[in-house]
Length: 78
Image (tube, rainbow, N blue to C red):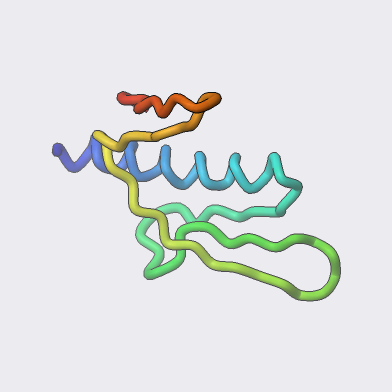
């Protein structure tokens, strides 16, 4: 994969994780650029100091498998 395209795919993965956490009311912060080992920081904001750090690995050809009723479907090209 071209280097320029890889950066966009990687950024998309970071933003998708941040979105997924934000809809669950978890505060997130994204590190941009070449930050070592941490891509997304998360905190529940309850004042207890619970924090997580994520390193995101994104693939251009990733597949998401979801259960709809009793049928499993593979969603490609996400």
